[in-house]
Length: 290
Image (cartoon, rainbow, N blue to C red; front, side, top):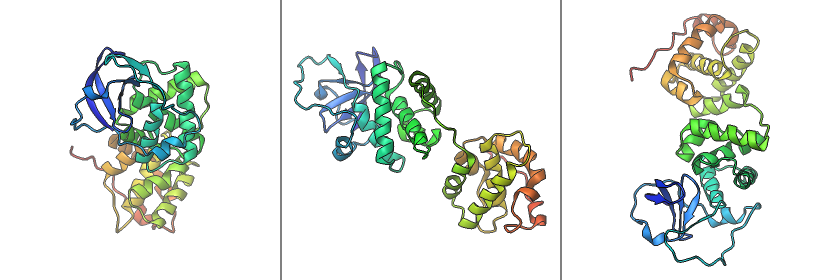
Protein backbone atom coordinates (compact mmCIF):
# COMPACT_ATOMS: atom_id res chain seq x y z
CA UNK A 1 0.00 0.00 0.00
CA UNK A 2 1.03 3.61 -0.53
CA UNK A 3 -0.20 6.85 0.95
CA UNK A 4 -1.09 10.05 -0.87
CA UNK A 5 -2.71 13.32 0.12
CA UNK A 6 -6.30 13.54 -1.08
CA UNK A 7 -9.54 15.20 -0.04
CA UNK A 8 -11.71 12.93 2.13
CA UNK A 9 -15.40 13.72 1.82
CA UNK A 10 -16.09 12.21 5.24
CA UNK A 11 -13.36 14.16 7.12
CA UNK A 12 -14.03 17.22 4.90
CA UNK A 13 -10.32 17.89 4.62
CA UNK A 14 -7.17 16.74 2.86
CA UNK A 15 -5.87 13.58 4.56
CA UNK A 16 -3.34 10.84 3.93
CA UNK A 17 -5.00 8.26 1.70
CA UNK A 18 -3.74 4.66 1.80
CA UNK A 19 -3.62 3.02 -1.63
CA UNK A 20 -4.47 -0.70 -1.68
CA UNK A 21 -3.19 -1.89 -5.07
CA UNK A 22 -4.35 -5.46 -4.51
CA UNK A 23 -7.96 -4.48 -3.89
CA UNK A 24 -7.90 -1.51 -6.29
CA UNK A 25 -9.12 0.63 -3.43
CA UNK A 26 -8.06 3.62 -1.39
CA UNK A 27 -8.67 4.26 2.29
CA UNK A 28 -8.61 7.41 4.41
CA UNK A 29 -6.01 6.88 7.16
CA UNK A 30 -7.93 9.17 9.53
CA UNK A 31 -11.52 7.88 9.45
CA UNK A 32 -11.20 4.49 7.74
CA UNK A 33 -13.58 5.23 4.87
CA UNK A 34 -12.61 3.97 1.44
CA UNK A 35 -13.05 5.83 -1.85
CA UNK A 36 -14.46 3.85 -4.70
CA UNK A 37 -12.58 5.34 -7.64
CA UNK A 38 -8.98 4.21 -7.29
CA UNK A 39 -7.84 5.71 -10.59
CA UNK A 40 -7.98 9.33 -9.41
CA UNK A 41 -5.05 8.95 -6.99
CA UNK A 42 -1.48 9.54 -8.07
CA UNK A 43 0.01 6.06 -8.17
CA UNK A 44 3.55 7.50 -8.08
CA UNK A 45 3.20 8.87 -4.53
CA UNK A 46 6.39 8.23 -2.55
CA UNK A 47 4.97 8.37 0.94
CA UNK A 48 4.72 4.88 2.44
CA UNK A 49 2.44 4.07 5.33
CA UNK A 50 2.00 0.30 5.36
CA UNK A 51 3.19 -2.45 3.09
CA UNK A 52 0.48 -4.75 1.81
CA UNK A 53 -0.18 -7.66 4.12
CA UNK A 54 -0.46 -11.12 2.64
CA UNK A 55 -3.77 -12.55 1.53
CA UNK A 56 -3.06 -15.59 3.66
CA UNK A 57 -2.93 -13.42 6.77
CA UNK A 58 -6.17 -11.69 5.83
CA UNK A 59 -8.02 -14.86 4.87
CA UNK A 60 -7.28 -16.46 8.23
CA UNK A 61 -9.36 -13.84 10.03
CA UNK A 62 -12.09 -15.73 11.98
CA UNK A 63 -14.10 -12.63 12.85
CA UNK A 64 -15.43 -11.41 9.54
CA UNK A 65 -15.08 -11.93 5.82
CA UNK A 66 -15.40 -9.37 3.05
CA UNK A 67 -17.52 -10.40 0.11
CA UNK A 68 -16.07 -10.03 -3.37
CA UNK A 69 -19.37 -10.02 -5.28
CA UNK A 70 -20.53 -6.48 -4.45
CA UNK A 71 -20.87 -4.16 -7.43
CA UNK A 72 -18.85 -0.95 -7.22
CA UNK A 73 -20.88 2.20 -8.06
CA UNK A 74 -19.56 4.63 -10.66
CA UNK A 75 -19.60 8.10 -9.00
CA UNK A 76 -16.08 9.14 -8.02
CA UNK A 77 -17.15 11.14 -4.97
CA UNK A 78 -19.14 8.36 -3.33
CA UNK A 79 -17.73 6.72 -0.23
CA UNK A 80 -18.76 3.65 1.72
CA UNK A 81 -17.76 2.28 5.08
CA UNK A 82 -15.35 -0.66 4.94
CA UNK A 83 -14.32 -1.16 8.55
CA UNK A 84 -12.75 -4.55 7.89
CA UNK A 85 -9.98 -2.83 5.94
CA UNK A 86 -8.59 -2.31 9.42
CA UNK A 87 -7.94 -6.05 9.58
CA UNK A 88 -5.24 -5.70 6.94
CA UNK A 89 -3.61 -2.88 8.87
CA UNK A 90 -3.61 -4.97 12.04
CA UNK A 91 -1.78 -7.73 10.18
CA UNK A 92 0.73 -5.24 8.77
CA UNK A 93 1.37 -3.62 12.15
CA UNK A 94 1.81 -7.04 13.74
CA UNK A 95 4.50 -7.87 11.20
CA UNK A 96 6.29 -4.59 11.94
CA UNK A 97 6.23 -5.52 15.63
CA UNK A 98 8.15 -8.69 14.86
CA UNK A 99 5.22 -10.95 14.11
CA UNK A 100 2.46 -11.24 16.70
CA UNK A 101 0.85 -14.63 17.22
CA UNK A 102 -2.38 -15.47 15.32
CA UNK A 103 -4.23 -15.38 18.66
CA UNK A 104 -3.15 -11.79 19.30
CA UNK A 105 -4.03 -10.66 15.78
CA UNK A 106 -7.42 -12.35 15.89
CA UNK A 107 -8.21 -10.86 19.29
CA UNK A 108 -7.20 -7.40 18.04
CA UNK A 109 -9.61 -7.85 15.12
CA UNK A 110 -12.39 -8.88 17.49
CA UNK A 111 -11.83 -5.73 19.54
CA UNK A 112 -11.81 -3.61 16.39
CA UNK A 113 -15.10 -5.15 15.25
CA UNK A 114 -16.72 -4.17 18.57
CA UNK A 115 -15.21 -0.69 18.33
CA UNK A 116 -16.61 -0.25 14.83
CA UNK A 117 -20.11 -1.48 15.73
CA UNK A 118 -20.36 0.71 18.83
CA UNK A 119 -18.71 3.72 17.13
CA UNK A 120 -16.44 3.86 20.17
CA UNK A 121 -13.58 5.82 18.65
CA UNK A 122 -15.38 8.24 16.38
CA UNK A 123 -13.05 11.05 15.34
CA UNK A 124 -9.81 9.17 16.07
CA UNK A 125 -7.34 8.14 13.39
CA UNK A 126 -7.49 4.61 12.04
CA UNK A 127 -3.82 4.04 12.85
CA UNK A 128 -4.26 4.91 16.53
CA UNK A 129 -7.30 2.62 16.80
CA UNK A 130 -5.48 -0.33 15.20
CA UNK A 131 -2.48 0.19 17.48
CA UNK A 132 -4.75 0.39 20.53
CA UNK A 133 -6.44 -2.88 19.60
CA UNK A 134 -3.05 -4.60 19.25
CA UNK A 135 -1.90 -3.10 22.55
CA UNK A 136 -4.91 -4.48 24.43
CA UNK A 137 -4.77 -7.88 22.70
CA UNK A 138 -1.07 -8.32 23.44
CA UNK A 139 -1.65 -7.42 27.10
CA UNK A 140 -4.48 -9.94 27.38
CA UNK A 141 -2.21 -12.67 26.02
CA UNK A 142 0.60 -11.61 28.40
CA UNK A 143 2.93 -10.64 25.56
CA UNK A 144 2.82 -6.86 26.02
CA UNK A 145 4.09 -4.27 23.57
CA UNK A 146 5.13 -0.79 24.68
CA UNK A 147 3.60 2.42 23.37
CA UNK A 148 6.91 3.30 21.73
CA UNK A 149 6.97 0.02 19.82
CA UNK A 150 3.39 0.50 18.66
CA UNK A 151 4.03 4.14 17.79
CA UNK A 152 6.86 3.15 15.47
CA UNK A 153 4.82 0.39 13.82
CA UNK A 154 1.69 2.52 13.41
CA UNK A 155 3.45 5.79 12.51
CA UNK A 156 1.33 7.45 15.18
CA UNK A 157 2.10 9.52 18.28
CA UNK A 158 2.12 7.51 21.56
CA UNK A 159 -0.20 10.10 23.11
CA UNK A 160 -2.89 9.49 20.49
CA UNK A 161 -2.55 5.72 20.81
CA UNK A 162 -2.87 5.95 24.59
CA UNK A 163 -6.03 8.04 24.27
CA UNK A 164 -7.53 5.45 21.94
CA UNK A 165 -6.60 2.70 24.40
CA UNK A 166 -8.34 4.46 27.28
CA UNK A 167 -11.39 5.15 25.14
CA UNK A 168 -11.72 1.49 24.08
CA UNK A 169 -11.15 0.18 27.61
CA UNK A 170 -13.85 2.46 28.99
CA UNK A 171 -16.48 1.83 26.31
CA UNK A 172 -15.95 -1.94 26.07
CA UNK A 173 -15.37 -2.28 29.84
CA UNK A 174 -12.13 -4.16 29.32
CA UNK A 175 -9.79 -4.98 32.18
CA UNK A 176 -6.14 -5.40 31.22
CA UNK A 177 -3.33 -6.18 33.58
CA UNK A 178 -0.43 -3.79 34.11
CA UNK A 179 3.00 -4.72 32.82
CA UNK A 180 5.42 -5.51 35.62
CA UNK A 181 9.11 -4.58 35.34
CA UNK A 182 10.07 -8.26 35.64
CA UNK A 183 8.35 -8.83 32.30
CA UNK A 184 10.34 -6.06 30.61
CA UNK A 185 13.83 -6.46 32.06
CA UNK A 186 14.94 -9.24 29.70
CA UNK A 187 13.54 -7.50 26.63
CA UNK A 188 15.20 -4.20 27.50
CA UNK A 189 18.53 -5.85 28.28
CA UNK A 190 18.55 -7.83 25.04
CA UNK A 191 17.64 -4.73 23.06
CA UNK A 192 20.68 -3.00 24.58
CA UNK A 193 22.88 -5.96 23.75
CA UNK A 194 23.62 -7.16 27.31
CA UNK A 195 25.00 -10.65 27.76
CA UNK A 196 23.29 -13.35 29.83
CA UNK A 197 25.21 -12.76 33.05
CA UNK A 198 24.28 -9.06 32.99
CA UNK A 199 20.63 -9.93 32.35
CA UNK A 200 20.56 -12.29 35.33
CA UNK A 201 22.21 -9.65 37.51
CA UNK A 202 19.60 -7.09 36.43
CA UNK A 203 16.78 -9.50 37.27
CA UNK A 204 18.16 -10.14 40.74
CA UNK A 205 18.82 -6.43 41.32
CA UNK A 206 15.23 -5.64 40.34
CA UNK A 207 14.01 -8.16 42.90
CA UNK A 208 16.23 -6.59 45.55
CA UNK A 209 15.10 -3.03 44.83
CA UNK A 210 11.48 -4.01 45.47
CA UNK A 211 12.40 -4.62 49.12
CA UNK A 212 13.48 -0.99 49.53
CA UNK A 213 11.12 1.96 49.94
CA UNK A 214 12.07 4.05 46.92
CA UNK A 215 9.54 6.58 45.66
CA UNK A 216 10.20 6.04 41.98
CA UNK A 217 8.26 4.39 39.18
CA UNK A 218 9.04 0.80 38.12
CA UNK A 219 10.53 1.86 34.77
CA UNK A 220 12.75 4.44 36.46
CA UNK A 221 14.05 1.80 38.87
CA UNK A 222 14.65 -0.60 36.02
CA UNK A 223 16.48 2.04 33.96
CA UNK A 224 18.83 2.84 36.86
CA UNK A 225 19.52 -0.84 37.48
CA UNK A 226 20.39 -1.39 33.82
CA UNK A 227 22.64 1.67 33.92
CA UNK A 228 24.50 0.41 36.99
CA UNK A 229 24.85 -3.09 35.54
CA UNK A 230 26.29 -1.75 32.28
CA UNK A 231 28.70 0.54 34.16
CA UNK A 232 30.04 -2.50 35.97
CA UNK A 233 30.61 -4.32 32.69
CA UNK A 234 34.12 -4.02 31.33
CA UNK A 235 33.15 -4.98 27.81
CA UNK A 236 29.75 -3.43 27.18
CA UNK A 237 28.88 0.00 28.54
CA UNK A 238 25.74 1.61 27.12
CA UNK A 239 25.21 5.39 26.74
CA UNK A 240 22.65 6.93 29.08
CA UNK A 241 20.72 8.21 26.08
CA UNK A 242 20.21 4.68 24.74
CA UNK A 243 19.08 3.32 28.11
CA UNK A 244 16.58 6.17 28.51
CA UNK A 245 15.22 5.61 25.00
CA UNK A 246 14.74 1.86 25.42
CA UNK A 247 13.15 2.14 28.89
CA UNK A 248 10.93 5.03 27.72
CA UNK A 249 11.98 7.61 30.30
CA UNK A 250 13.96 10.86 30.00
CA UNK A 251 17.66 11.16 30.74
CA UNK A 252 16.83 13.66 33.48
CA UNK A 253 14.48 11.17 35.15
CA UNK A 254 17.18 8.51 35.02
CA UNK A 255 19.69 10.88 36.60
CA UNK A 256 17.30 11.91 39.39
CA UNK A 257 16.32 8.30 40.06
CA UNK A 258 19.99 7.34 40.29
CA UNK A 259 20.42 9.76 43.21
CA UNK A 260 17.61 7.97 45.07
CA UNK A 261 18.75 4.44 44.30
CA UNK A 262 22.56 4.69 44.33
CA UNK A 263 22.87 4.80 48.17
CA UNK A 264 21.42 1.27 48.16
CA UNK A 265 23.52 0.04 45.24
CA UNK A 266 25.71 -2.30 47.32
CA UNK A 267 22.58 -4.12 48.50
CA UNK A 268 20.78 -4.07 45.15
CA UNK A 269 23.57 -5.29 42.86
CA UNK A 270 24.34 -9.00 43.47
CA UNK A 271 27.84 -9.50 44.86
CA UNK A 272 28.57 -12.37 42.50
CA UNK A 273 28.41 -9.84 39.65
CA UNK A 274 30.62 -7.09 41.11
CA UNK A 275 32.62 -6.31 44.24
CA UNK A 276 31.36 -3.69 46.68
CA UNK A 277 34.25 -1.32 46.00
CA UNK A 278 33.42 -1.43 42.28
CA UNK A 279 29.75 -0.79 42.97
CA UNK A 280 30.53 2.28 45.07
CA UNK A 281 32.50 3.80 42.18
CA UNK A 282 29.59 3.83 39.72
CA UNK A 283 29.53 7.38 38.28
CA UNK A 284 26.51 9.67 38.17
CA UNK A 285 24.77 9.40 34.77
CA UNK A 286 25.93 12.17 32.45
CA UNK A 287 23.47 14.05 30.28
CA UNK A 288 23.94 14.00 26.51
CA UNK A 289 24.77 17.29 24.81
CA UNK A 290 21.91 17.19 22.30
